[in-house]
Length: 416
Image 1 (cartoon, rainbow, N blue to C red):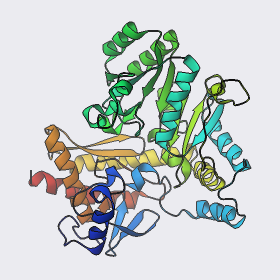
Image 2 (image 1 turned 30 degrees about the horizontal axis):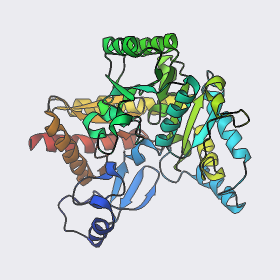
Image 3 (image 1 turned 120 degrees about the vertical axis):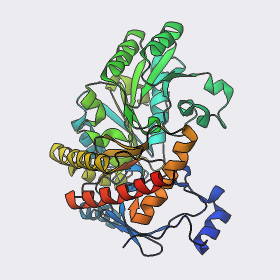
Image 4 (image 1 turned 60 degrees about the horizontal axis):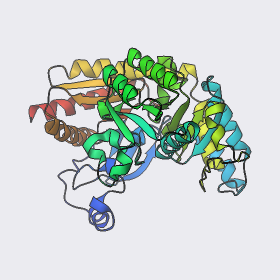
């Protein structure tokens, strides 16, 4: 059953309620899709049912969080055990934290330790603070356009969109380099050498149209950081699912710190900074002058258990299978959308339908129009275009999702 077009339906009681109690009617900015908004009633596997009872193929997966779809039985069973034992929110450490750290370090042989947080934003924020504490420097280099969460230190990567509410003094500590511009990065190090604490890279940023950095640029950034004594921070909050050792493993880059979130929590709120023991030594509270970092719900047993089971279910074979399904999706959708102005971009199992050759304002309008056109076809995307596959999908589900996306993309192109 396909979904009704919620963009044009009459306001519901839910619409009136959310507009009254939430700024703009949305609890999260990326969910903003217009004056109307779909609401979920239930979800299972690859499907999501909205408040009207209509089923959609979920390619949103909570902005790539749900690696194994919704309500995976192995994850739920493990989480229930923790709830039944009362191991939910504790004021002491727990063994699940150690097992989760082991699971991450097994995938990242360059790393030595892990510190957990509650979100990807918190992970990036902590990584930057660790870099500043470890180097004794203030400046941070980011690539624009880019998005590393809502921490002030990295919001300037969003360019003008990241300006509101960030003080000028904070912005002055963040040096924005155009993505992929080797010469500009060289100039920044020439001008500010010895004062840069960290270079923060997203190897394939959705905010830049899901276009990967080149291996040459990444190698150059690593070389410049090492030579200057700055720390290399890789943000893999979105892309960690794209390889057994994340996208950094595919690039062959060995960062000092890696920020993680989303998929490693098994559907629960999570963040982590994985790094070398040397870089993370500033968090050792047994040492004088240590960086104090806390979080009431950090590394709670439920999240740690859900995350560990999620990783256990996603070995090298499963990574390869999911990426192959995404390649099938990209190829077939590309054929079906040929000549429409829509291009399907891919990084591992992360996908993005992108309007090519359209003006910037037109692209934003088109992306939102595609969301609603796809919704009407029974396919859930995101307002910004970021989509992904989940391991519970097979070729049949992927091909049906492709057919619905093609129909939606052609509809938007016809109305351009």
